[in-house]
Image 1 (cartoon, helix red, strand yellow):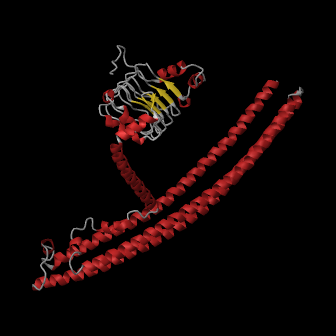
Image 2 (cartoon, rainbow, N blue to C red; image 1 turned 180 degrees about the vertical axis):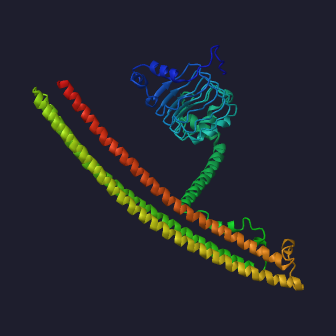
Image 3 (cartoon, one colour; image 1 turned 90 degrees about the vertical axis):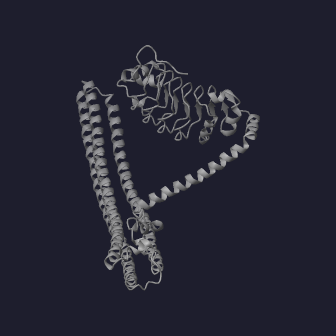
Length: 520
């Protein structure tokens, strides 16, 4: 299988080679047609053949962003790489090379036909993103384990497969492949008959049942993970992530070494559970409030965008109407001038057209100024609304965290009181139950136990404060960032529109000047 280097130096994919290959494809092809145009634009090429070029490394294909079909077969390529920009690729031929590993295909999600025939590949892997794969040729490689085929079950659209010529394909392998890949219609270039499929499934039914059971379990896990990620995203965008399911309460004790021990004192268990219950309830209420406010913000953004789009559409309609009216007038005048030979009449008519063009320019610029002022007012109203909503949201969030701190203080007071009472009994040797070793070390004297309780309280308050600051900061940053994007977007839109109007004016003026020059 190994293709030896030719005696000549390996070919480098450079600009000269690419231009040469495109032109060699002939004027009948799309690539050849483009090649004949002035100033070859690689981004317009849809099909490219780089076969039989003694290429060692795939490189310099970044500009072929609209490539659909790529031939790299019959070279000496050792690694699949540098294909990430070819996101529209549907057909890729890498057969007859020296490739040992399947990799570098993650971005080629539109790929339908992949040929890796006659390489040195030992494992089927790293193809998970090729969800549209219909045809796959992996024959004449080094696949020794037949269970590699099971990897291909994920490709629901796969209908044509070639595996002949691999070590595992020396015996009776077709029944295994057909049984494990129900979507396959053609195997090794032969149609899979219904009878063959039935016999294969019967032969491997037990193994398939196990695989399908595992696939269902994996699917459930995947769906659960997708749901979890979606929920986290929703909570994060609502600024209330890290609060569900007692997350913040658990975080209070992450660095608190002594607090959990003290809360397991028999006299504190009930108080601790009550504290936890009330604290988590406050967090849950905050999450519910946050999600509701996120919906309100989304609704306001939708209304804002709708108002912006409506204003833009109205401007577009009247602008197009003005341009079409002028173009119709221009066509009428130029048609009439085609029947006139008097130079003075022609000059007069051209002058009238130029004056009318200036009027159209003034009108279009007036429309743009009017739209810019309208959008500025809409943007300001939206910014005020969002600022008010953010302010109200922040105020209520801070109120919830104040409740958390009050609960923490109440629990701290209870824990302090309980700890000091126990300390007093320890000193008087009146403690009925023996304390565990780790707790006895805290009750050696009043200062030690007081410091432990206070340190626990300080750590809890720090966690609460940090979470509050995090939410408030993110709310403010999000508002400022969104407003900045709106302002920058409007600036860019205005510049583009003004340039568009000026470009229109210049084109018409050039046309009129050419007409005048021809007349003279």
